[in-house]
Image 1 (tube, rainbow, N blue to C red):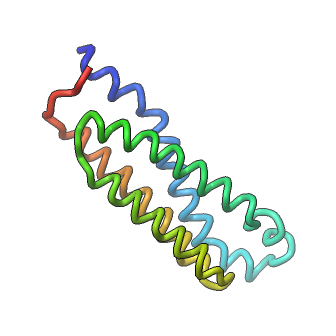
Image 2: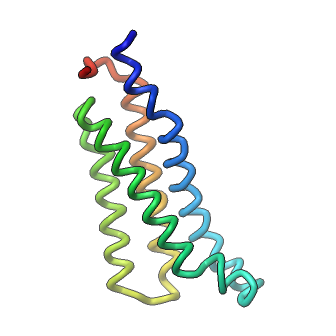
Image 3: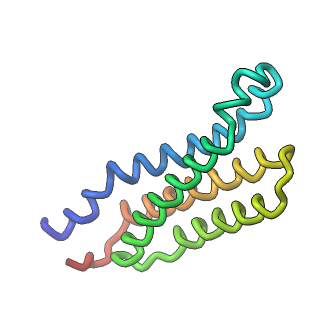
Length: 133
């Protein structure tokens, strides 16, 4: 019974990480519509660079912490692959730097990190491997 305790201790953080990933994806999907209807009011704060970087940095930091910890227990590399894809998407976004394309990169980034969480959750819920103490 004590072998399953390390897996369950991360569940609230995983839910927070999944929420942040989906919030990032929804944020980026909503941006074109919200900016079309309320460009000055919403566009100046809610979709500014500070909010974007807070969402991206917190989502990546939490995902990296949780997914690396689970990788060390279960040795399932696929969640880390999709986290890496998300990081690569963000790096491309930084180098492209066009305001009109940011929502596409942001949506792909959020979906990639959320998919990494989903793969990790599916593996942990069906895992029969022995968990290290």
